[in-house]
Length: 246
Image 1: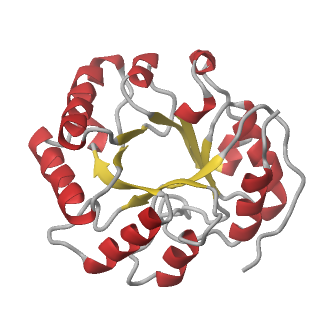
Image 2: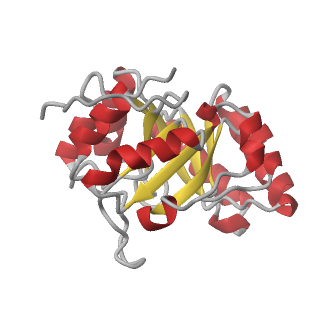
């Protein structure tokens, strides 16, 4: 599928694509093959085998991850913090499995709490992950702006995850201006093809360096909008790839 071309949005922020979730490589081989196509402006791709690493090694996932890593793309293991309710030992077990079975380059800590009171527990998890893997890339999946202290502990924060209807009227927290754009991620579903450029403009103005925009919807909370490749994938990739900052 050839990428379309478009004029860049000039906003001072260079963007790349972060893929927060995809269907299993066995059921969606074409989607994973598309991700591995050379030249796709990917920052990272999350590997979510079965709400985490699963209970046994999966050769299909290992192959898909290896193909991306061979092309220079980081693969992150999915760890669900369950808003701070997940036992620490379970998180460490899942992290070991991701590292041993799939050789991941980092982790997306999904459903990460954002309150100041939860910060010490999240910091403990991050410190442990870095001890296990050394130079590992940590993304905190808050889905909204947390208290500023979280930015001091992770490589990136997901500060928006939601619908296009909410995103187009969203506001950015003032404290984010103290950090470079490559520290923040936005995931937006339900973005019509005709509004891709507007959505990209919002992301860049709000200082989000890693983004994922899809026309898929969550069907009122009944579906996962991230597991299927966007219908406007080619145009999305092209617009991100040409969006050079000035």
